[in-house]
Length: 258
Image (tube, rainbow, N blue to C red; front, side, top):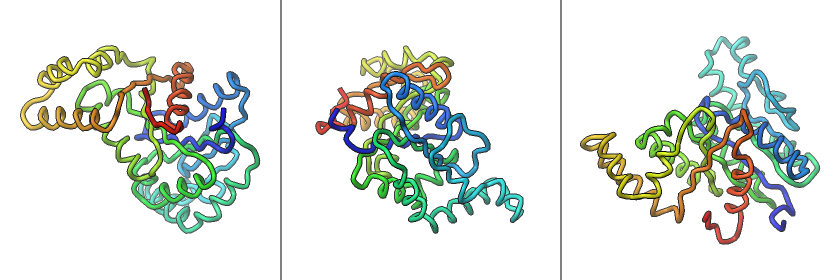
């Protein structure tokens, strides 16, 4: 496969609790078992206590949130912000260390639980930009499964995936994780039938909220040639082939995810 000639940086991103870390581990196991790949794992979350994979690079070798809380008396949020500042100050060293890991194939990048620290500060965009030099990158935006159970919640999730595209300046694909806990059949059916979609929005929302939801779904359609909901479960391994296919499609020259 021609797009496998260099590193493929797969950046897992999404709100706290969506399953980013579990997704990194599950997708990595699938790549190893099904394709014989040897992905490297990059942990960029200084606040995580335990990882289900062995990181090739671990940001906790530079800074740990629990250490900052103990040493400075900061609370969890303050310590996360301080950790982000430290990473930004040492960003060049972080990137050099990650890029020095030998191999080709996939870099699976686990981002902080507090998505806004990675997405809206300079840390995330700069790291992604530097790691993408001479290779390719795609972000996997993981929708919160319970937020995505309503159309208004789904609209919010999709809006964040669009913002992720704007901030990181790389292709973004979206998945709904924890599919083993959530039935999305009705949502999929509505997304394929515009009349059902409008009808459901009218039932779920009222007034301005309904109007905004409808307009936003139209915006999503305008900027997406096809909307494919890929359901995954990091717990059971469901949907890993579909995720791989989405990444492959996102990196093809045509950029058409149909």
